[in-house]
Image 1 (cartoon, one colour):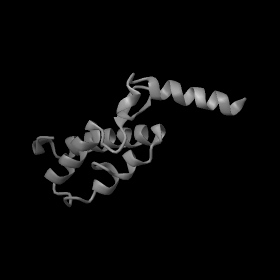
Image 2 (cartoon, one colour):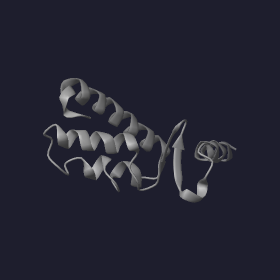
Image 3 (cartoon, helix red, strand yellow):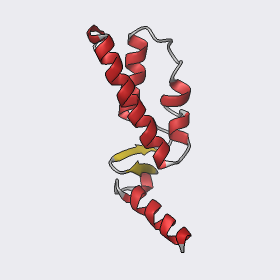
Image 4 (cartoon, rainbow, N blue to C red):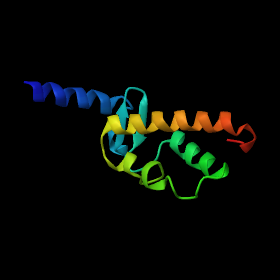
Length: 100
């Protein structure tokens, strides 16, 4: 019974974006296409590099095809997107003239 409820909950979460054919991963309002970075993380990676961060250093986690997006776990997608939002906000405050 618990397994059926868990599968139903996952179906509801995945259906939140309304298009399962695109292999979308969703948790609440955070959605991403499996294997592709969220816009928030792409912005963070770009800002990181513009503010002196080593190019490519974040790609294996937050970049296109990074671990955040290939796991296939909606909670991981949400956690990574949230982390990127937090890090981006910190960079914007620390280096406001970087144009992030």
